[in-house]
Amino acid sequence: MGSGGGSRPGRPLGVLCVLAFAAVGCVPLPARLPAQTPRPLGVTAPASPAGNAAPLALASFGVTLVPGRQEATLTWRYAPDSAPARVLHLDLYSVVRGVSYRSASTIIGQTVEPHTYTIPLPAGSWSVRATPENAWGFGPGSTGTVTVTNPCRAADLCARVSTSAAPVPVRLAAQGFLLGVTDGAGQLLNPTKVAQLAPRQWRFSGATSNAAAAGLGVSRMQILSDLWNSATAPGHSGYAQTPWSDWNAWQTFVQGTVRLAEQQGWAPNYWDVWNEPNGTCCPRFSPADQATVTVGRWMQTYALAWQAIKSVDPNAQVVGPSLSALQWAPGAPAEFDLDTFLSYSAAHNVRWDAVSWHENTSAPSPGDVFSSISNVDRHVAMAKAVMARHPGTVAKNRILINEYGPSDTHMLAGWAVGFFRAFEDDGVSQANLACWSEAECTTQLDGLLTPAGATTAVWWAHRLYADLGGATRMAVASSAPWQLDGLATRNDRSRTVRALLGRHWSCNQRANAWCANNTYIGGASVAVTIDWPYGSAPVHLVASRLAAGTGAVVTPPVLRSVVVIPKAGTLTLTVPGVSDGDAISIVARRA
Image 1 (cartoon, helix red, strand yellow):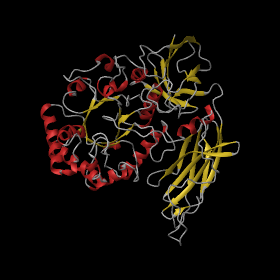
Image 2: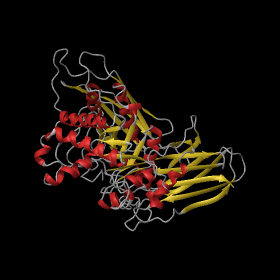
Image 3: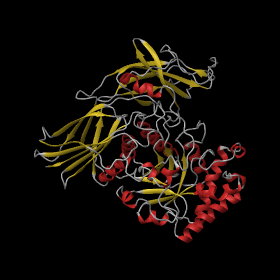
Image 4: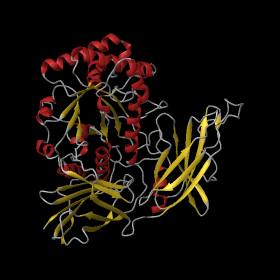
């Protein structure tokens, strides 16, 4: 629950319809609009003389299919005129019997954003309208259309596992956890089930859990704002005191905390200055204090904390800003953006050891068309582009996602696998699960265990992910990577290939009580082809299912166990009825 909870925005109306429309007959949005109608998010101003005019139409705009995938790539070029566009509005329409239904919209800025965008699309006809805007109004829109078909001939979805051109090991970047390390006496909870996951990092606050976490050999992150909340909330009607109400008290607290941790032996690998800097959670400010929040005060909060930490221990590693959701350019509704944060840091000689944010909301961030695992890839790319604008401000341009897993999908093994793939592909150094209830954050290992302490399908996803750790990666290609992707490895010594695939379209209310959206995504057959690198001898192939759901799973049920002969250097397997939120494990080894 993002270090203690708080409300999370739901999916915008129509987001799931755009993805479910063609496949399951989702009712389109009630607004029936002509395709050429833009979706302005402001008041259109009349054109003015040169220099004070609405932008011209785009110089070019194209919509093309991505070969072999259910995706379309948009590319555009702005007109080289004297009234440049500030943003570009993208409106997506589903075209049914010649009528266009608006399905989703977003706004693309011009800070670090490339002039290209890839949109996941199910089979059907689609139209995209691109409308430039500046302070003086909207320019003419440009429209592109595309018809998406299923590139998978053998099943509803296809995945292919092949030798990677640049093989790298699985780093287990996503094998991190939040809070709930120990009981009140400092004893590690669920030690066997924790050890089986080969954890890499843990994020918590205070001295109690440190010894147990250190015993696991994990990277430890201390949340300073949690400790500040514990120190100030009891005398402040249960609300955290704002650091700017007494800057001296804030600096003194940070220095004292770091000094105490050094003296008592619980200094972490990373100090995390503030969790989700919005004052609504967590920590939470009083309504009166919330009214005093400004971006400038947040910037000073971080800079003073950094200086205080370094004054005690110049070698301490410090991360920030741990935003509740990444916004890379100005315009975030509740929190500041990464570019503002790094600009201020560079100007004040503050050098971070990593930037951090959370990927734990289902609502699309500004700049996303709709909710999708593929948004994570884009967010990381945007963060890297922002860091490139401020060279030397972040050590090695390191990225930590110190909370991940939206509340409505965090119990689905298929979504967990999607996050594993994204963090491994995108070079994220560390990622930690979120937790969404008091029990999850204390005794249930961030929801991986049931209230009775039994393992769940998501625990098994992490367990099978751990089995991939250190092994050489193979490439996984999908006909629809926004709803099916995964990781695969090869072990040349044992002549074994392992694949872990996850389906992640929606939140599957039928199997998942955390899901508030009743859109139903049907089961899909998945055809898997493995490029087998170990000759023509018989192969023992075992496929298991981690079914979408929140109940106990003692061991994943085996779907198929068979000895096969490779044909033309490949193994093939079709898994029927893969539900949204399922994960599939495939192990192939010489018989």
